[in-house]
Image (cartoon, rainbow, N blue to C red):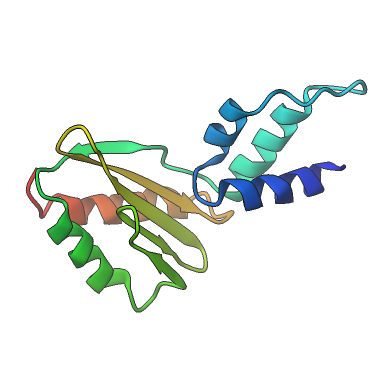
Length: 135
């Protein structure tokens, strides 16, 4: 299996969990001919989906925020999933807002598709909406 096939397999498996999460759950893939294949896959995936990482913000009542984000971004989104917080996918970026179970907080993650400069822009845009709500 080549790197492209491994990358496609990872993308199908992790959906929106992120590459770091996938790599932490799986054993290293040995390679007799060079560097660890996992390193190559990681570099490949990070370039494809630059990520903000998990951003944790205190929030007592996240549901008004989730409704606000759904109103703002809903029509532009290719996919909306509100089963576990809110996940929205667009043509060149995606975000997920998860609600923490054990304390009043949310976790935000923003990823862009290949466009490294877009990730900090979309992260700042999304965080500006969070600042409007109870923290």
